[in-house]
Each structure stands twice: as C-alpha cells, then as structure tokens.
Image (cartoon, rainbow, N blue to C red; front, side):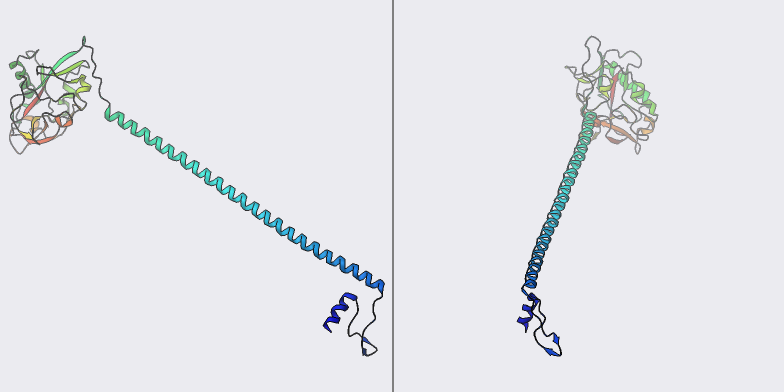
Length: 299
C-alpha cells in the first residue's frame, strides 16, 4: 500500500477513493496528463535545486561578508594598537627629553666654576692667612677680631698692614649685617693668595672666594708656616667663623654672644682648616672656651 501510494503520488491517481461505496483504484490519467505531470515534476525539482544553490550562495556571501567585516575590525584594531604604540613612544620620548633637560640644568648649576682667568695687568693681590695664634670666643666682637687679624699682619710685615681696616676676620656676629659679604671689599679682579713661598691661589674674584670648592685650602699662617696647635673637630684644627661659604651669616646663636664670651656652655660656629669644600668655613659648634684660630683677609 505504501509503494502504491508513492507511485500514485507521482502518477496523479488516488488510492482508497470511494466509488459507489466500493474501495478500489480510481481513474488512471491518460498519457497527456502524465506528460504534464512529468514536466511539472521536473520543473519542481529544478526549482528545488535552484533554491538550494541560491541558499548556499547566500550562506557563502554571508560568510564572506562576515570574514570581511572581521578583517576590517582586526585591521582597525591593529591600527589602533599601532597608534597607541606611537603615542606612547612619543610620550616616553618627551619624558626622556624633559628628563635630559632637567639633568642638564642641575649639572650646570652644580659644576660651573667661576672664571679663574684674570688679566695680570689689572689683577689685585689679596693676601689670605689663618692666624698662628689661637683665641677664645671673647674676641671683643667682630671689630675686635678684625683688629687681631691686622695685628698679626703687621707683626708679619704683610703688605698694606699698617692701614686702618686693611685686614679683616672672616667672621659673623649676632647681626647678619656683620657678615663678610656685607663688610668686605669685593673686587672682581682680586686674586686671593696664601703666604707660602709659591703664593698659592685660593680663589679669583669675590665670586671665586664664595664658591666651593676653593682652589686651595686656607691652611698657611701669616708667617708662611703650617698650623700646629689648637682645638680640633673631626681631626682638623678649627677657626671661628659663623659664616656660610657664600659669606653670609650661618647661625643666629652660635657666636659666643656676639664674640664677647670665652667660656662654656656658649658655642661658636667654626670651620675646619685644610678643607676646600664648605667645611672650611661651616662645620662644627665649639665651646667658646676652646683655643681656636681666625681666618684673615686683606681688604
């Protein structure tokens, strides 16, 4: 029955159709009807084939379009990543430049030395020494210390020593205006020299004197000898100062009560003899009762 139904489906007959109350085969199509059915069947099969091909083509087109879209997105992503990398590299370079500029400025500030060349025809020699004698903090004020420097210069027959105010102490008291930067003569063409046989240059010009390191340590006395006695700090002999390397006041209290007290517990700010860095003038707080030297400068 199943095989017959399939056959009838193709031939156009009907199975089990009632004719006058009896089951049996229906009318059979003539040859003309069969030809038309065959043609319809063939057309139907062709349509199904075309539909399948079209569907497959559509699927392929969709797949191709999806791949194309994905490629576009991938390309965009790659370009975005490349752009981000370039931007980051640019920022890194800027940071590096910025970093190089800063390092360069710091290096210039830290390492530039004052011009040490002075025309010998216009140079003015200024003698510098550390006193052979030692003193306590009761110096008679800054003026008293200046007088002690001049007296040492006169005793050693140093040039210009007899003139008033010709030699002054590198010393600052309670008043910031008593600092060397404000009461010393400061010729730009001065050449500060030691009283040794070579006339060793300590600094050239006021700017050179107030810039560390010095060209040579101030460690020679007015007589041309070495310091051999006195209070020490960290192994070096000391000189009363209370003055920074730039010639200004170092401390508002460490000045032995304006250099009038020579006993403890008052303190005086000292530098250490033999150094060329800032320690030459500003390193230790020493008892005003200690035996300490003075730095002296010709004016």
